[in-house]
Amino acid sequence: MSTRTPDRRTDATSSRREHTRSSGPSRWSHCRKRGVDGSMRTDEHERTDEHERTEGRHSSFTTPESSGPVSRCAASSDWGSQVEDNEMRRDLHRDLQRYRRRILAADGPHRERKASSGSSGSCDSKEEESLETDEGVLLRRQKQISYGKNTLAYDRYIREVPKHLRQPGIHPKTPNKFRKYSRRSWDQQIKLWRVKLHAWDPPTDNGTQEDNEEQLDLGDIMDIELDFPTLAEPGPQAAHAGVMEDPEGTGTPVKVQRMDAAAASDVV
Amino acid sequence: MSQIDETEAHPTVMENSTDEYRFQSFDPDTQMLLKTALKDPSSVDLEKVSNIIVDQSLKDQVFSKEAGRICYTIVQAEAKQSDGNVFRRNLLNRLQREFKDREDMRARSIHEWVCYVTFICNIFDYLKVNNMPMVALVHPVYDCMMRLAQPDALKNEEEVDCLVLQLHRIGEQLEKANSQRMDQLFFLLRDGFLLQEGLTSMTRLLLLEILEFRAGGWMLSSTANKYYYSEISD
Image (tube, rainbow over all chains, first blue to last red; front, top):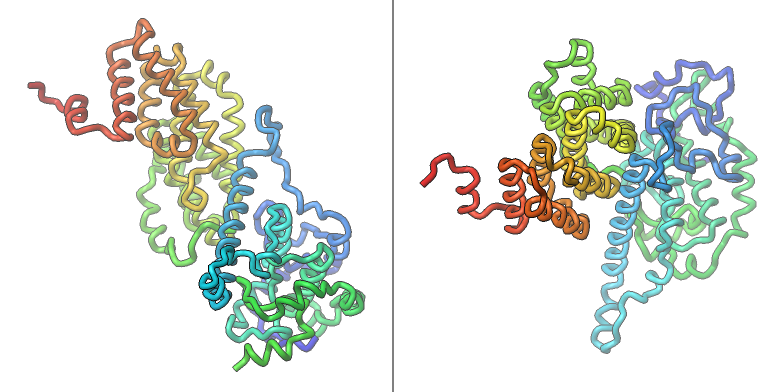
């Protein structure tokens, strides 16, 4: 990993390490701030390893049932979950609208040309076509992103590297959930992103950051590197590389290989 | 995820307002717990806090009118502090359990039932998702209102009083969320006002006022206001 190594000073977060890791909690789990129910987690709560999570549906992907009696009327779920789902959907649609506005803004010149030629439908630009609008897909992706952001590493990362200093290909970048990708491609992007974020894991008990990085699953990385070429979706990616900004910044981990071109334009 | 803007809800503002809440009816330990929940929600058991608030609301109608504000503050504080919603989830699910047993509750104690309706309407009024009422509560609140508009409830001034009070507060929001059900509710209220025998004149007055109130676009004309609220008669 050529990523910037966070400094080793102990900070507030390190107080969470008081439990020894003798029981060998998964390195993916010990940095998680909160459990499914939103309460701050303690190290007693075990989390499955990332490998397991990508294979099957991790239990935390499903809405936990309330402990109360099952509703007679509402077949769906309890009020608390209904409100949360509702909140998530609204946020998603708001984000999608914002993303669309950005696309239109970036498309400005094209629009004018089209308008002058009298053609309608400035919306059917290539960017619009490659938009992922399926609510189910977007909600699933948002959850995956939320899990990544719900980590101490993510907090440390955004605190230590201001947005304008982040460089494509060097710093982790949240995958763009609004762009059309195959399931496989998306999951791989998430995986890469999560791996990169782990460079900002708080130092552990039995060692420094280096130890931590050595623990990083080599198999995992190899897997990703080897898989890399096969997940390419030449269509949309080639067509749109570097064109758009997503709400989180530019590009996606998939475009790491093209970083020199992107970096040249991004970095002053 | 969170509906809260980072820039608002300064902790100092919250601290200042903490003292305003009516916690006197609780024992000192509980008062402490509630005050902590307002300032530092993640340091307390929020399920316990939500149960304390609901329990008290079901007993104390004054508190049930106040509780929405308290719950709002805790929800905001928790979202800001940890982006969590443990408190809201527990609160809503407890409300839902009580809702399922509402007929038993009403049979057991009209007072408790009236407190419940006051409380759920207050929550509906205060807790919003992205500035919109929580959709999950729209039908339950309507169900409560419809229940209060049934003939047996109209005979009971305590329930009529509760009904019109809630409609004054949240009637407009409810109608925006679902106008059909508001129409149905007002069919019942007109029928009650016009056809039901044995209602007290106070009940008829309350019903007539709420009918005029909605007809005027959820406000009273100045003459109507004078008619209902002026102490001096011509």
